[in-house]
Length: 424
Image 1 (tube, rainbow, N blue to C red):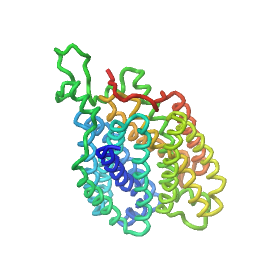
Image 2: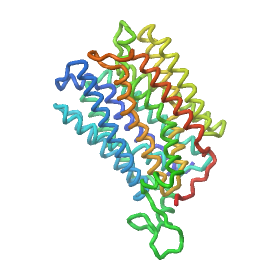
Image 3: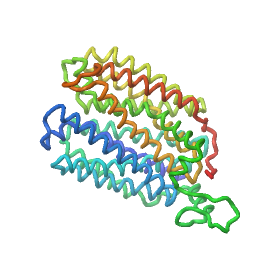
Image 4: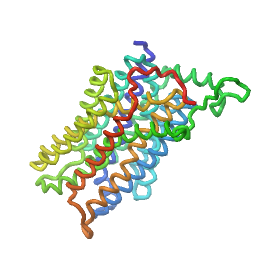
């Protein structure tokens, strides 16, 4: 394999490692960090934690659109390193918050920065690798990156909350040293030349060839068939963030609802859940390459996710370690994330690929905002109780998985697709 391709895979993988390390830190540090700045009431910790998570996800949604557009207009590499710089600085500043409003601003900024790394990295790797090896490269990026979440689980258990944020930020800044020697995607350079290299990414009016617009997010909304294609991609990945937004983040609340004697520790949940996710991503990459199908792999994992959620609620109430083991199993069933991102990048032409591949996963992540809101509404509060939290989780999870399966069935198969094409 070409040295420049290996270096690109390494940078994208390590960037995603730091990305995931920083992204899941809040799930681990939600309770201790809020207590440290003076929030002690359990209901307030849940409510403020939900608001902080929503702001982080809103930042990711807006950042996904912005960085995706920049990736198609100014290059995959500039977007990749700009994203790393922004979220690294924001996470260093997170270590020094003393008020909730400061925390809110910085989680939004960190989310905005975190939005750009994965899509830009996956797009770069997918465009540099030949068709037959594309899935292998993107799986390596995802597996190494997901180990960052496992590392966050370890750090959250042994380090103070503010030291965890410092560590994540410093790792990101250190990664910027690798930017020298990484090559830009040849397909992006070709698209830039074909578009005339203009600032807005469009060919001049006098050119007889079709106009090639680069990085225009409105193209994802029109014509309707393209918008539908984008919606199907998002919905097929949405069940992953039902699990990430509800089952991982609110695991302590689920443990209490199960009346477990030993309190559920967020750091252990994240550690074991993402051990499962890493194993699942390896498996999904191998399966996808073996059966030569992204679509069938996604559907198979969604079916496995449905079964694992049912099994979780049967086995987890037996004890804390059963709880962690089942979280690992559920995490493994969400391990089609790498294949999902690869599919998102393969569904769209070079002039819109970074926009789609960067915004799609962040739209999926942002789905956690309405999903967690519905979950909190379904289970109610101490003053206005609703469904049992366990029943609320089962019902909402079932709905999300069914929607995901229906969307995945309608996706185009892209395993053998040549990525040298444009959206007009």
